[in-house]
Length: 236
Length: 113
Image (cartoon, rainbow over all chains, first blue to last red; front, side, top):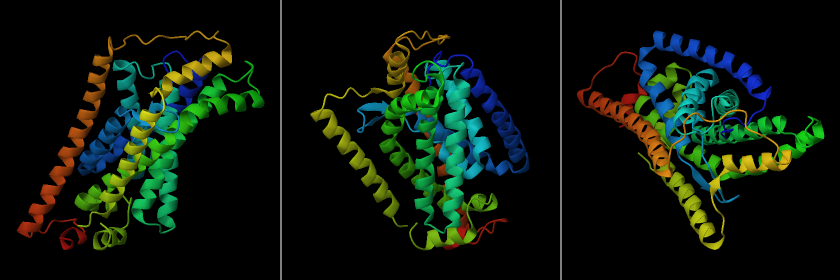
């Protein structure tokens, strides 16, 4: 999902910075507030950030298109801490990759943060909340939320590229759709099996977190006490 | 503790791996990066006229260095996850063993083992 350095023309790279920067700032504010109020969440924040680090470094092969891409890992952070704080964690990882790996770039950072740090987490968060409300099995909900969040990130990247590079040079609806088809053919399609793997691994991480440190999740209203009891009683 | 979820995840990963091995041995797919393929599409759409408006100011000088930095990224992350999950796990076990009555602990923490 990394849009490479220099591959977003003006005005698009500025546009995505303008969208992303307020969210990042709000995320930093929320993160500071949370850490000051509840110092005991710091380790969990570190785990969520580390999970993004690990998953986004793993380039996995995709059998659908015969190319490689990577999961994002931001869904877990979104479920526990909400999308704004996930945007901050995503920015840290994207900055590391832009500076040291020439993956993504500084001019395209805004667009990449928007897809991986904002849209993906928002989708994961909404799916999670809806799924828990509908009383679906906790692990199934985590799987769906993180897999769809991952996939939404890559759809967003396709949209960003199609807006910047519509067919026929001028941005028309038909030109946008034609380019979107091409970019989605690469990103969204490649990502399908990877999103499934990300969902499965995220569900597993949640199993361990619930098992060893559920009180913090209950306190943060991520999960209700009765759900924890049920998970431990039966399927955990 | 049941291992049902572990088995399901293992099955998903095995299917993923088997599919990859099958495909890489039967087709000549290159498994290049999707990010790079997007560059090809951009060239196709713009007729090769697009010039990147910025260059990365540092690039890993070789594939080895690149994989070093990717490996480092994964190792840092995995270390942090393992450390804290291990810490919490041991803490929970010892608290259970000593019958420690923590404040703010939900009852479920002690009943399950």
